[in-house]
Image (cartoon, helix red, strand yellow):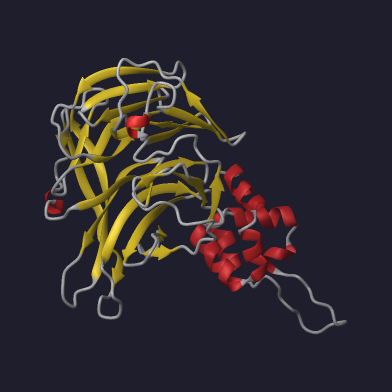
Length: 384
């Protein structure tokens, strides 16, 4: 088995088909494709996605192979899928948002050209990461909740329509547990114990209602996060009251109230701690089920920015990635900046952050286009 670096070097140096000197009018295969097909596939599977993209541009043979489901499955089985940051942006006044991927080498957002079933809702959608793709669930269409569901396949960058939910929902809580997607709330005043929650079976592609036992049905869920060890959803409603939902027994357990009610968004669980973004560039943290939020120290230089999105870098990395708009009037370009932050717990009640990298990842020139701004809608790390 060739090493990954050796495979990359050989692929860069050798074209897929080479011709030797004319002899008996026959073409001889050389380089990677001179190897047995299984060996060649295994070598390609270890190549980084950036290099695979370069190969796809240089060779039709490589391109058709790289986008095939069998090749993606092989990379998955060999553990060669890499975390990539996907960002959903709406560049105004374009009619629909677009997906971008953050290039890990050049640290720039590159637009993705999707084969789309139809544009998903722009606002109030719920997103669920599963395998090498992301589900877009519900949202607002013309100001009204929708039951639409779609799936972004990041292996070939294609949107697929998915079976509609039984209820139209917007701003719902949605999480994947044991290959099933649980969607809670988001149906407003129409909610009761029989329709407040529903579950999607990925294998059968069917939705079913869950009859939830609860002393109080939260009509609006402000934030939620999946507690992996307990396989339950931990959330806070519009009144700042926390609760837990357990799919195993379909019950809701009420918890404590938020210690400091206020603006907090983009919850994520890292190393057993909850993180979110607050106001004026603050990143907050707390222990789960306590909601005693504290500020991550050492990030004063972010205080002048209004952070738009926060997400975890990858499932095997404890760093945080944040995005913010850097817009100004006149001839200055409209930009999106990003920063990667590492975390260090120096004391049981004191957590520090260090900015490992920051810079502009996307730029628009208002002189050449009539752009009205950029809205950052969603960011997620996906292994693909």
